[in-house]
Length: 181
Image (tube, rainbow, N blue to C red):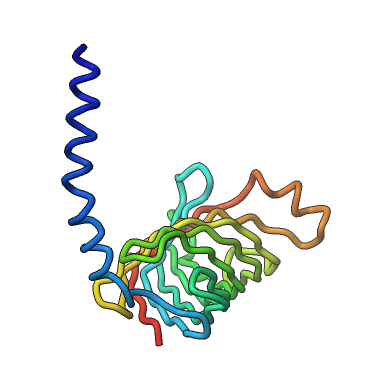
């Protein structure tokens, strides 16, 4: 009987809230990009190995083009620096192509995506990199957002080494802001 009362209360509360939720959705119309829009974002990036015992920090910038209102494809550039214990400081850069698919069309837009590119710099073999990412954008204005993104990348120099190196990847984290135009 207690379960029935809880379910009844939840249904009644939902029925009372539905009109206000539909009005709230109407106020968010026009938020976010449309097909053909471009996007620029910049953020701080942190990196760690898969065991989270070595890391670095730096900057990342993205330039993307919306293929439709949910899918953006573009290029990403990052540069990071690491202080190494008992060694020389090191820098690393990465240039990657990316494609992200966004869920939702309101202020909060989670996304998943994939990257493919190259890394270079001190202490790394200049090689290819591929990864999967997930993140979230929150629109503070109709065309301006803050975002957080996490990407797992692995290195390869041939198709055979891609499968071998998947378990030896690294994590990239980005927190930043962007603009659609």
